[in-house]
Image (cartoon, one colour):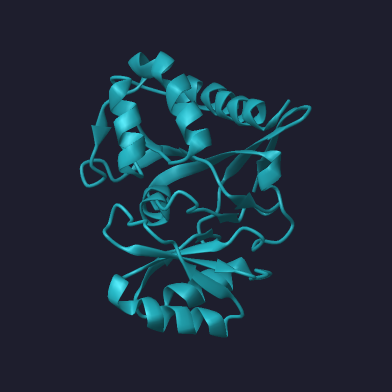
Length: 223
């Protein structure tokens, strides 16, 4: 299978995993990105089996709405049975880097509200150590220079994602050159920098299940 086939297979595996547990009052958390888009398209075939969704981005909310799937504010439904989303990198421990699409803060909030976080990805996202993919950090605009200086002290090279504004009205600094051997510690340290909204390491709340599309089929990892 090529990369697109792997993404589609992992999305279908997520559908197969959750459908037996859906009930008429189920509200699902839905992520952002190309693999999440494939999941949304497949989910539309089962919309009579659940109540609605909470989305991590406007783009995903728009896609869900086009399929006729209800989208709610998280403040209406703060407990979610499942959160399904992709990743930019994943380790065997199911720590992730997310945020290539810029929705990391809302993704992290929705993931925190879910009983089970299911990550869907293709095998190009599989790494032993996080950091080859630049770490996205959402930053209050007035703190850009200060935060960049602090990120440099961590050993990274932050670059402003030009022309991009998050759904929260903030900017993204993509940090290149990090080798993240202790993802929980780096996640916590980065989040403590004044001016940082959050960063794209998902290690304090990693995925519970990874459905990894490979050239020979979908491999399931759990923690």
